[in-house]
Structures are given as C-alpha cells and as structure tokens.
Image (cartoon, rainbow, N blue to C red; front, side, top):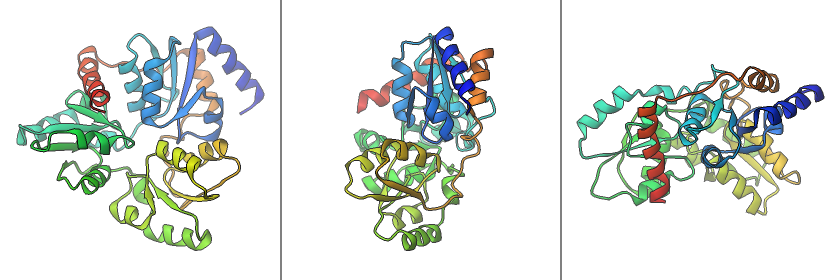
Length: 302
C-alpha cells in the first residue's frame, strides 16, 4: 500500500463519515488501514455500535450482511462484491426449512457464517467464540439443529456431551490442514502450543492442544507465558497476532490455509469503494427483521 493510497483513504473517510472494519483473515495492508480488526463477534458488536454513517466492511459477504442487519440506518460497503463464503453457501433457506419440518420441535441455531436468508429461519445465531455457551443455555429437552458447519457443530456436541442435528457444511480452508502438517510443525517448533480453529475437523482438534476462535486466540496469546505459538487457521491471523504481540512468535502449521475470498480485498479496492460508494450491501426488510431476532436472541441468552 502506498502512502498516496493511504492518504486518499483517510481523506475520503472524513468526507464520507466512514469507518473501516476488517476481519482477522484480511491481508496485512487491509488490517493496517482498518479502524478496527476483529473476529465475527467483535465485528458484529462494533457494527452495531458505530456512530459513522458508512461502514466499509473488509471481510466476506455474510459479514457485510450482518453489519447491514445490525445497522439498518448505515450504508454498508463491501469493497469486492465477489468476496463470498463457500460454507455460508452450503445451505439455503429452503433446505433449512425442509430440515426444520423433519424436526418440528427443534430449535434452529445457525453459525454467523451463514446468509441472511438462513439467519432469518433460525431461533438463534452464534459465533465460534460463543457457540458452546449458547447451546449450553438451550433447553435440554429440545432437539437442536446446528447449521451450516458440521465441524464446529461436532466440537460443540462433544464438549457439551449433547447430540446435535448437524448439516454437512464445512470451511474449505480449515479442512486443508492435515494431521501431518501439525506433526511436522511440532518437530520444527517443539514446545510451542498448537492452536486450531474449531472449524477444523475432529482429527485436527484432537491433534492440537487447543481449539479456539480467532478472538480467543488473541486472548490466549496475551495471557500465555509461551513465546512461540503454532496456529491452525487462516494465515491472515498471523498478521493480527504479530501486530498485537511483537515480542512473541507465531507460525502457521501450514501455508496452505489460505481463504481466497478473504484475500480479494486490497487497499486499492477500499479506496475505490469509498470513491464510488460501492458495493452497497442491502438486506430485504422482512428477512432483516427475522435475522435480527436470531442475532438478538444470541445476545439475550448469553
């Protein structure tokens, strides 16, 4: 990112009354120019509380949708309209309605990595950071449908000792990590704890020392006495941790864990987005109202 681009962005932010939010998986230059960097839960809270009238959301489509739902009076811009999430697209609202019809007494919980249409069909929304607490609060005499990530769902189920009805969705990035990757990383950095995201399959979670959301990874790194850490998640997380804790070392268990959609946004695209006020992300009012209820229920139960 050139100084000229950064200066133009700073100038346009003032003109547009804009704030830039970026996910932990964004490329380094985008994280550096953002006003706030965080995980899905942190970004949702920030989007709901910002005073600025324009939110430039550097993430993927479902995240910008969530910001639009939480801030209906805001203009939400996604700098690359093609930045999607394969996992979120693995279930449709119609498919969820069919599943709910098979389990009419079940409560439906969706991971925040889902479309607004799917959120609108759910009783609760959750993030990887609060999924355990949320499901644990739900009535034990009710079935629980968990969509779309079967790996996060299985993590919640095994931790709580509770059977969940899982949808066969998954994160295409986290499933690229292998047990062999973890074993090789341990050889290279003996003693460094291995931390994987709960979107990883069970065999990887079992091979790791901890399964933590990206927000929890930040907290762990802050509190830990360790100076080296091995991460099994999207490699953009390394930049965030290195910026927050420059006196500690963070290594990926593999360089393969790259989400191409998270890497689509660049500093130049942020600039172009502010210049043209594109692409505006809007959610149909009826869907937004119902999806907001699932998000509000998440906050109310925790």
